[in-house]
Image (cartoon, rainbow, N blue to C red; front, side, top):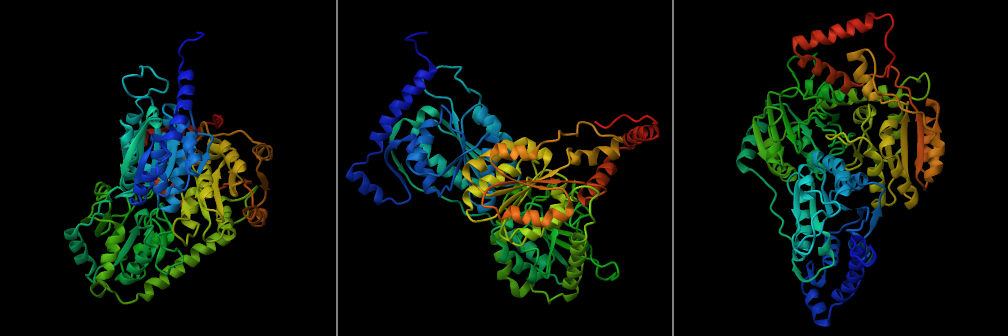
Length: 631
């Protein structure tokens, strides 16, 4: 209605008023500047809520804010620009959460995302859930509807945003007054990394961004990391027993302590296996490193090293597992397939993770770095003599694994996915960042892609968010200048986030997007065929990848035969621009240990009646002379 009040008009007016307020509120007088100089590390002085929030992010060392501005956040994004805080515009809020997650995984510091309320929040939930379940530190700056007595009900995006975020966040901090803003943002950084890392959301009503206040906000207090001395003493008593043959199972909680972990392994003469998220906590070239997992689902080297040598009955393998900074999650254990050791010492910074999926003799609530340091301080009591038989056995097992990797037979058409894993390892430098995705090949990469440095190999493990690798790689490339960055993903995952590749092109980020193309959800086909003797809803459209790359502004490489793999991948990863690499893929009869082991465990868990029902259906469909078509 002409001359009437509209929300659009109010927002436009608020933006104009906010600009005047920002200009006046952030112009400190000489006395204020002197006072601020006396309080280094503080958010200090009179400024708007947007300016105080941005100052808090700068003081926390934020390297990039990932997100999409909106009507409720324009004041904040303009302040990012004014104060030279780096940011990256994404195409979808799922990507913003994933990019912040990737920042957290690659740096160990919280990644920051910024989204509007309503659809901005709901679109980001899957990415935040991945960060939560995979223990990755993220700070989410989330807009909210305006608060206060002057604002009406039924505002746009008026979902219960804080409540929606709580299931996928470690903590949620709703802001009710402008004065709270910098303190809650800085507290979010502390919470995101203390104990088990995870995402933390700060929910900000948008009207607070243009309000001004006098801020005197000191750096937040950082709690001491946990350490249970009594439990450590019990663990020490087991580990110092020379009759115990110790194996170490290390997770992402050890990622910042690769030197300490290797030193403890050498002290105890213990083979070291990792979770999927923990790949890189010890160099897989180390004589005691055996790969990931230690059951039938995981690395064959790890399973054999932990089992011991059948030819030597007195050497029955590992008797005590020291699990440090790791959860026994479904994916990393192959549907809880890790064998129960005689003794288990479980160490984790989150007491809620201890002894949950496996029986533990000792649960030590402790930071992994402090625990490993305390073991090293007891070196004289724990040291074992060098076990040359063990290291030689591990060496021979690795040689066998390398032989498998180097002799992948040619595929009938296209490339065997294991050959792609092998070629990527040969063409990428040790410090390259590789982001895998939710495909059958994620398990092949976990077993065969040798990782020699921490924070260089990444996988969406416990939420299994398809499409994760593309935005994750882009988010990492934005802040890791000069590092090679690549994805390894299937065509099904690619379809979920393909548009985000346009962001890499727009920003000139040299990511190598390796897409395994077989026109199918092959993972589902591997699960469906044995159980149902047919596939359902697994066929994908054939895509003109060359046209797609051209549309997005990417370079393009096509690999149609296995012999072309290495030279074409090598050329692609050396390109100074983003490149889409389409690899025609033939899975053939490729077996995957993880899939086979999980299928066996799942089958064993079925009741007799359930097994009979499956067998009856399988038999009927096998004998059917006119079987139904797949899909």
